[in-house]
Image 1 (cartoon, rainbow, N blue to C red):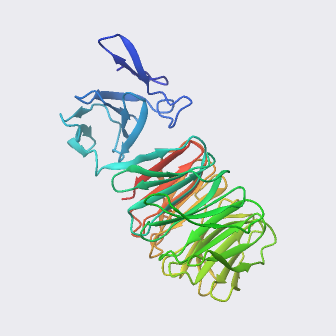
Image 2 (image 1 turned 180 degrees about the vertical axis):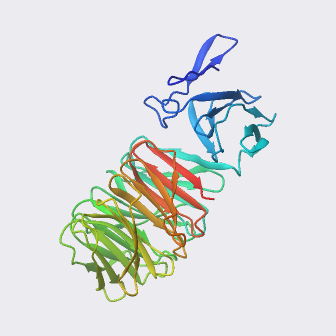
Image 3 (image 1 turned 45 degrees about the vertical axis):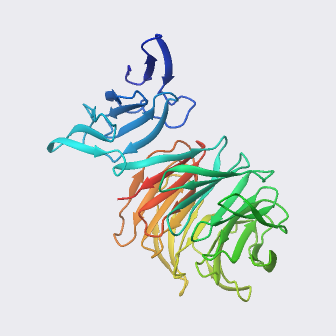
Length: 401
């Protein structure tokens, strides 16, 4: 292999003298060597993976045949000047600031890894509460289900005839809901992709969907300014919720399925009682459209993201804003909150993914891996893993320290 500053890395077949792949990221998935100096490289004994170390402190592992970044190890203190790999490729050694040699485990030390890749922009993702399943929806009209523990794709659901804008999973990951740009909503089983219900009623784009923990109730929202509540035991519409004065861009349902919160282009958020179909409370504070919302499992807190570039935390019992952070340099497109409401992950149009631990005021970590806007984000119930998808067509899985 050969690397150069600001250029490309090429992988060669030494018997045939032919180039196999380029690790240059140009027109591909993840930018790498245009910004940081490539310091060191190695190839695993089986020739299947290339390992690179850069001045940014990251070790990247690549598929040698495809030239695609597979995963990135947690950041080192200082640049990666030298790399060595064990014979089985499971351990990587490199010098590290303050110690002689650091040993990396290529499984437990991953900062993120790639779950999958769509053929067009990923508009939405979701994570099951039990942490075993992830789901993504794309403009390519497919929904993909992933085993997040094994790191592999399990299924593609391909019944949508338009781009998918919203997805959701039941707590155990056995049921999924997905909505598209034609106003169609599907409820289906994730094991084999069996369609259970086709929910109709929205007149235009369905921007968001959600499903209760046990999979018996769902919510949806759309460009037609409505939020709809669905009984998934009958497949029928239960309530039609009105009040927003523009498109309803996002909706999130509580774990027990008794309440939901929505956000819209009118810059407001509304809390709904799903048993009665009545508005409980209205939240104001954002100065532009509310693009994304998420509600904690216990239904006590919610987090929102807006075109005004802010992320805000709310007390749902009092209606008061608890905290506001401005970590993004453009519109906030995705938010997710851990089960206990203590951790938040957000994503933005500028391509940034931010992790915040709310008990530590002002604490923020950047999760670097996507190129282009990141539209969807989900977080495990314990707040230790996250899933993201964006304009680069990638679905990434993150380990949060």
